[in-house]
Image (cartoon, rainbow, N blue to C red; front, side, top):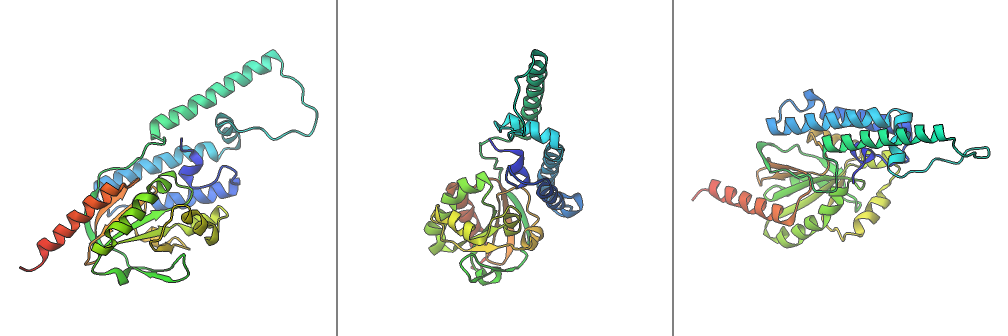
Length: 278
């Protein structure tokens, strides 16, 4: 089951300062003024995610609520400095009541926000707006320039190592890269490296993570969050399908399957052929 830590993009042992910073960064991404130009479906997704962030922060931003939440996940209390005495019957009753209350609050949160291990994808949202150009360092030491892929269908996938759906879709993205690369599909991963660094991970660790999945498509490092902000990325993973002329045609929020990629690629190739002069 996904956790509130994953929602904020931090590890369970993150400091309160790291939680504050992650919350502030996430709020900027989902602010109403930041998504005002998007279509209604994406605005709705942004509003829902903003509400989820507020609920998560109310728990993780309060040390006592966070302690109760951690206990509900099976965490253990750090050993005290003195000898430990047994609980009295009254203390046990209060402890049990507190634990039940904490579990109930967390269960309610998960029911309201749908935080589980099932893929949380949605149908492709159609749009037609220019894809923001970018030049970014590549994980392999080179450079990724979106403009270099003009003339191809580009699948731009935003992801992070802490994101469970991102991990699950990596094999599908690699398969799409291998099967459709020769037919005009370019898969590019955009790693939220600024968030990775906030959690103490470096590029060597990101590369080691990807090597477990055999990923060979190019990975752009979003070191300062500029690409993520330009594309108004919401939950991870988010994928943009860009046509050969450089316009974003479809957006998919959530885990992609190989069938999703194949179907969208075929549709876009048909659209391109339909616009070509006969």
